[in-house]
Image (cartoon, rainbow, N blue to C red; front, top):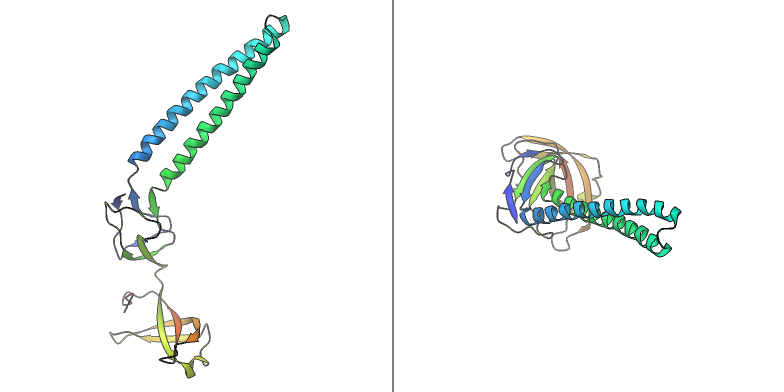
Length: 200
């Protein structure tokens, strides 16, 4: 579940800046349990290692059988392996804990926030949409006969509803033309401008 939303639409965010925090209550309990398990495994390993060291003295004197000495050494190795398993389990949970904070993959402007506190996070549902580095594109429809005169990198002037204009550059020309309208799509990258509105 989403515990807290940290940014709103229109906010400028940096790369890796926290956007939302997920509820980690259940995970925290598992982390505490894993830490206790690691401490317990470490204590058992230390005791088993000490016993394995002590039997070396008896081995030289012949006071213990070879089977007993081998059993103590086997216990020490098994205890060390258990410590490794417990540490790996704790590391996995700590990695999951880091993912409880949703961070911005790029710097830019938050265009859309579709998540609220209490919502259940889903891999298929985006929480935020971000315009990377504040860049906006114009999705222009161009007559088929004009497409051949346009090339990627060409300069374009885009008129805004206010009467002002902004400069851009052609980024992409679609390879297909709509058979009904005979129009092809051209993507024009526009420089950041406060008058630009996504969807306008």
